[in-house]
Image 1 (cartoon, rainbow, N blue to C red):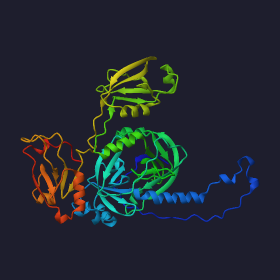
Image 2 (cartoon, helix red, strand yellow; image 1 turned 180 degrees about the horizontal axis):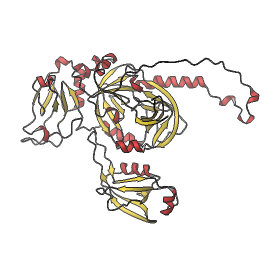
Image 3 (cartoon, rainbow, N blue to C red; image 1 turned 90 degrees about the vertical axis):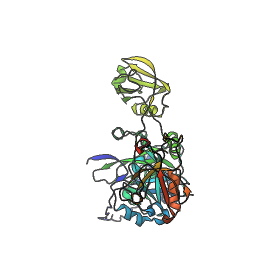
Image 4 (cartoon, rainbow, N blue to C red; image 1 turned 90 degrees about the horizontal axis):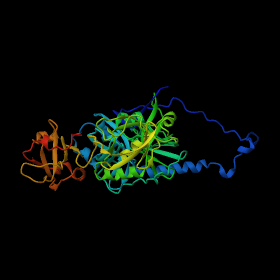
Length: 492
């Protein structure tokens, strides 16, 4: 049976009908016969597994951690409904009615800050116009993307809520092969009304890589946790817990059999680097990545011998970008053995180390070229930020047919020396409420319901807390400068 690899969000989700074709027959347990057990494999009573106790532990974990896990629903079209932006006006049936009329994506996330910050995979929310999360208890909140990092496949959402229960992260580098794993989430959108789905397994392996998927989508899918805990489309962005109920990873990808039953799941591990990125995304900051301009692979034993490398280390250069920082320094077939005196174990590690290095900072590489050792100094460049990355400057919210965003930081008006306060109207849908009111792209909204608005989180909070009939606003032209010349980021 063939198989394929995919990320574990679910696009264009439609309801599935599940049926049980048969039930297992009841088998009466047979008494154990001591003589059948070899003496060297005799089971000591004190070492037997307490299955009832283990079951109780799983039940306790499900009860304690599920309030911090959420189902994510994303729409690629605006609803043009004020109710959809107010948590008290929404519930699971109403959300389902809205999503029945649009193309949707479903995924999972988990609360990392009681003020309403939620972590998920970037591929769950990319390209979406409207987002909602549903808690384990069935509460529905509108959500916005605060920050995202497509390269790491991470995104942080914000919902207008407070005092939410949060997860706890396990100590970094604490994961071991064979330990219990627990996945909680929204497979196939089945938790769209609440009650997250739970599956249990073990850590199958560590430091797995998905090079084909990583290359196709320009993401860092390496150093992954492989688990037998059942993961399916819709589990993307959800937490992978240990037996203590602490998050050890973020469920991201799965290899599925052709009929899409269960398969091999992969999770981004919780590392100090990942936690640092999450804090930056919460603040809406850009995540910089260094760029060297080479493709590398792990060398074979023969290639190492030819290069006079005795140990199992190195990253072999396959190609060099003629416009990259390494264009005049590295050659194909060079084998890089260390970066700033850190030994290079393989190609995947080298890619991670380069990505995590500060750009515009001098480095030195030790390598073997034609069997001779060399040390080469160079300076890394900064990788271009993908246009889909969300920062403070590219946060967006759709309301009454308007696409609203911050005023670009580099904006300079014809007469003004500093950007004015407010939110910029980037686009207006034809025949929408805003269009009928005469709002045009380039307009500026400073207040709503007589309250000042200066950021997308401000707008989300106000729309959630204020009845629609009170959300009156006036728009005025921002300046005589055309909108095309002042919009810092493309529409997202």
